[in-house]
Length: 368
Image (cartoon, rainbow, N blue to C red; front, side, top):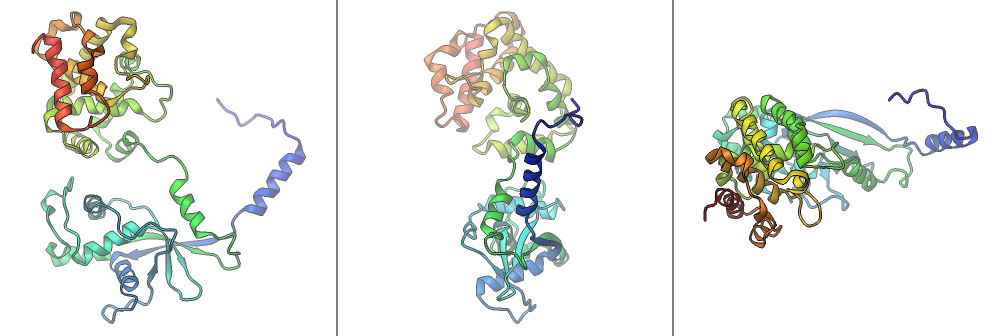
């Protein structure tokens, strides 16, 4: 609906007062955007670490980490490796926010400590790359294991930075801790589904999106808010598990990322669609009006552990006995044995995932 022609019901004085407040409160902070080579950033970080300026590859500037920032080094090695891989792949990296201190000329890091710390650790030979998703030939590599050309190229790669300028602005107006909070809290963070849809475009992503709009699946998975794409995640889990559920480890998010990347243009669309649709039809035929509650836990929310067990288990049982589409008996899902398997505690344990899926398969096939 086009709202551009709606007429305000507020008095003109109210609107003028609001306009005046915007003008009075609007920040007068200026800023410039610039790009720094990684090698230069590492030297500035090293100057801060050593509280001195190195005579080798002399760099006059240095960083300062303020109290409102998090500790210097809290990322796991796996997360650090993922960040380094993103740079090596040429992916865009979020801006670093800096502020030049008047008294010393040092650059205070308003936002970006973990990224800069990771760059320093890698270039100084203290970070061993591990669990990379695309650059698998670099598993176990340190920076010095790269060729001289690759090292030079990495250090010459530039990252974007915003340098804040608060000349003429009072200290109360220019609170860097508040700016830090705004940068990190403004807006809702992307959930897993939104991140994957934006980061891994392609044929499989489009296919998952399509299946998430299936009317029968929507009936089985009622959500009050469809804006955050919750069904995308459910469909992805179903497709990723029906062939490889026994291979899923503790890090489900990383497993799903890898599946989406590896299968993006190499999957059996006809089979995936058939198994998905038959699973939905089987649940609807067996449960009728109660089908909309099949994946919900006691609190009335759709639970991943329950969804995975029932959806994947049903699809696998139908592989062995297609006649179950009109004959399946799901009374067991209300029993204590099944409830114990899908209970929240330890539900991401690989053994429990395998156990609850196979429990559903065996129950539907009438096997022990």
